[in-house]
Image 1 (tube, helix red, strand yellow):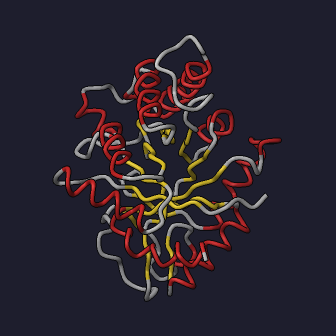
Image 2 (cartoon, one colour):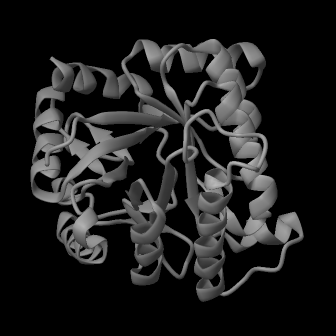
Length: 289
């Protein structure tokens, strides 16, 4: 089943209340469906930022993009997520990840678990949230039966297994962290392998779960390094069209590329980083026309 496109933008910074409100309203005005708030130290705290985003807008969904699951007690997280979902009339999309930045654990004073332990913690957190949201005796109650949709992001076999068990939306990472801490963008061939593996894990749920990816760069000329992209992100700049998270050419060409990715890989939900907010708007308009 071909699902409708959805478009998100990850907004992680604001110098004031007014600037955050303006940015959120602009995202809604440009046609975005989801405002995501990353979970990194040094950025806005996701849940308070989502509450203000909800007050400033009318229809967009609000997404934790994505919470570092080992940082949170599942019981406290269930309470906070249910509260925000209730007070936003069911606009929350709860994004979860296993966490990857050792420096953030150190800064938070939390021991950095092994990769296996982080994935296990994510699995347990997702299961606990599902149970809490289904428990009619637990308060506060989220606005929607069953609670907010769970968005689980990752790439590896075990993490995709967790996502296949628990997620309504699966975020297929458009970049992977290498041993040097850099983000290496993933090619369409690599993504196709992950999608095939994911579909095997999903079984009967194949086609009913949304697949998301992050667009890291928009390259109208097809060359160069776009302004605003962190130096940590690397790819073969001579072959930008090979990557699922790089859009190349005119807005029409970018729209065609997204149609291809939806047809070939089932990716219909795409999120851009905040510096691409304005540049993505003409592409959204074409895909909605």
